[in-house]
Length: 191
Image (cartoon, rainbow, N blue to C red):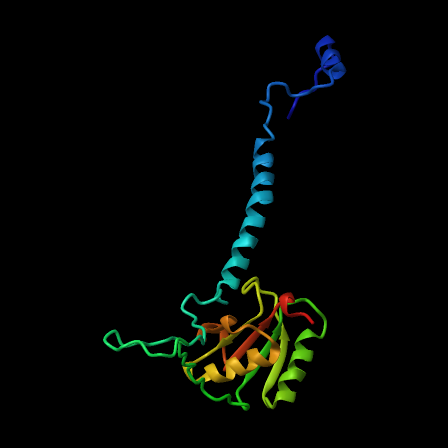
């Protein structure tokens, strides 16, 4: 059992002090500051990384995309003809499949933009057109993606109907999902 001692002058001095337990070392707040800095820097970086990873599924413009510009062929051994006009041949594009599955994505952040372009396509004769919103970062301009070489004519017809330049028609199977043609609309196309 603990013994009780009468209060003496040392107890009076200890009671008058504002700081108690000075024999204990002072704890640094460095741990809390480090944790705060890590949270303020690491959390936004992790979020940015996740967004970049998700948006990497939609490819940027394919560097191997070709235009439909014709080329002139000449025989190096032939005599020059009297006609000085170059003869250009325009390759014939495959015909459009109006029953192809087409997805129109509104990436312009303009209400009803995809629906109005869906109307243009259905007026043109396309029968299987769906719309949805799009919040990806790529592509930066309105682009038509198509899934296979056989869909090039359909993609070109979609682009022509919507006023998208032919250089923005890209073969990209990974960007089309279950659709034959996917259109990403951006503000550069707004009417």
